[in-house]
Length: 214
Image (cartoon, rainbow, N blue to C red; front, side, top):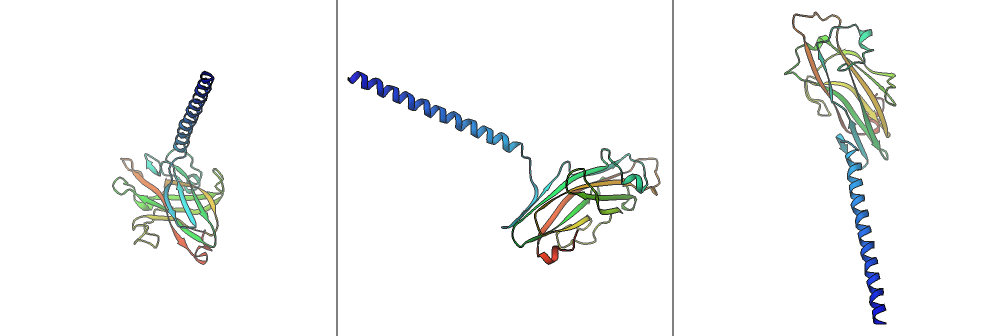
């Protein structure tokens, strides 16, 4: 009788150990899977948060460089699609309640490496509701035009505002930026270069402020 009881207790202890080991395996697998999933999510950049809204700027390589490029006409420039000729990115805005957001898309010139003058460079920005659907002309071909002083979104003097956008509801907008050398540029004996990076600046706003912007 006692021996049967001992056997039964032994089997129960073994069962408990097996269950605990199984739960431990599940826990380890779960943690590993969560870490793997997180590593695939990427990084959010230039995040601005309040209690009711978040703006995420999702970017790739961060900018465009003109290097050993030849001058082209505006019609050609607006159709460019090669490496270092376009830069695709998106801006995602999440809003709840009666709130609004204003953001600016900003190009920052690298003055230490750029040798081509501002007036010889053209930037052209389009937008659309999804990737490769850039049907709206946000910025017509325009020379690099630096701000004379810091603006109300803390964009620094010397940077160029490509677009100022107001949002009163959640939305994701996809953008394509093109940059080229204007056809009036006289090519010298040495190649010229022009480097920019792209960032997004934003702030909370009233609905009245945001309405009417792009």
